Length: 204
Image (cartoon, rainbow, N blue to C red; front, side, top):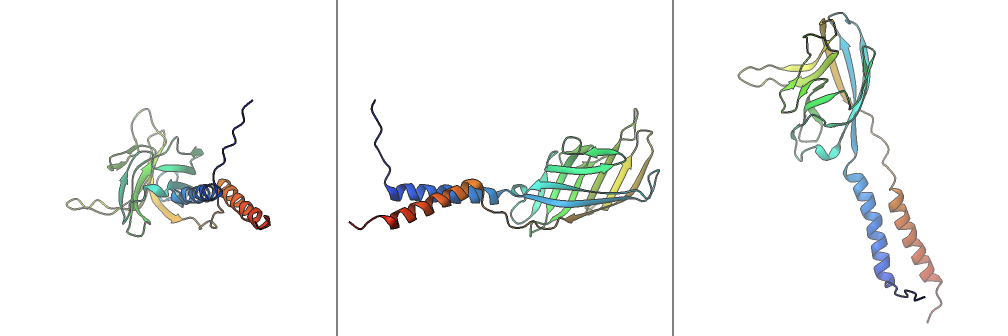
């Protein structure tokens, strides 16, 4: 049986391995999840005094360079929040928009259970047959109406009762700098092995 005896030149192999490792590390750093802590407190209505804390995350890749507003119904990559005995995730919570300042920090937002993707905000549906809804908004007033919602929270229950409150978003504690991915580590390990093997070769 014929055997393939072709070998890549060692410098080419070394370069390919190093490139593979660097690309793996770069790809991991290019799209990191950004996580925020959400704390809501009902100040009126049947659930007045109730509070809940959860978390949400979005991909760093959606943050516009220099800041700006991003529209979409599914901007969150992770949601972990519980309100009035119901657990919420990305499957039953939506976004209308997220806005970032020039540093990439989240500055305005609108999200909840029933949202309009074009940036028109979210709603609490107080109609039959009744819904368990909530919305969180932080929107600066825009002329001529100046309808500002500052750290705003509203909820609605199936019996069509409702209430208002406050909602605070704060960046989660920064995670430690991630280690290179396993693919990157493999590349660096192979490169190191090749260098060591070259040093052990006898001089010609």
